Length: 323
Image 1 (cartoon, rainbow, N blue to C red):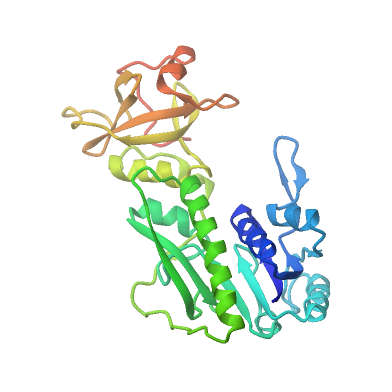
Image 2 (cartoon, rainbow, N blue to C red):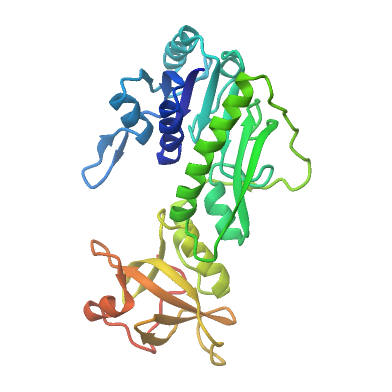
């Protein structure tokens, strides 16, 4: 099929590579404009753009697709490129821009979206993070026929994936990206054969995966240990959970629920024990066991290596909430 592909991060690149390798003709790639990143804040191309350029696929990077919006020239140029592509379909994966109706109507068979959740649960920007944070035991990928709503279109294909107790957003992302690429190939095969069977999303069970904000990463020790541990996993690799002790804000990369309960009267955030297997910290009616930390500018380290260069002792305390 002649395809337009719209996507930006690594999750989308995996699908683009899979579609391209399968022999689909990618006539145009839409991706977000280059963004500043790193210590030097130099402009960096998205993963999707890098792959497209390596393969000689035309790339467009409009700041908006709204013809009546803030960047009408960008939208007009994108419309000309989309119209000229004469695509059978558009595949969308974590693109980051809202598609107005003229885009949805442009390809002959419309726009198909790869969404990393079991719709209608976790519509929105951060379904992987929110599923882990909420303690969901399963997630999956939904291939959806896009409409003008926020992830409200008919479902075309759905496949479930269990969430392991050890899964982080990093590990779950990689599994879902591979699943999304495979499922999108199946959907396109069915579309080419006229065999797709759209199913409306149920009205019950709708939840929204709001965008992750950096301030959410600060650990609140007045929360239960189970929730803190889930948030640590959900915020790995971004924005990474943080905790402040001895005047220094540390990144917390791995943590779990510790054994036992805190002694009566123990303050939230106080350190009960420091051992190679973990740092025991008081939370609400429970104990958090921190397993991997990082100082600003330093490396991610297990507890045994970390405490060789940073003094942590029982009786010290993390700030109730990181600054």
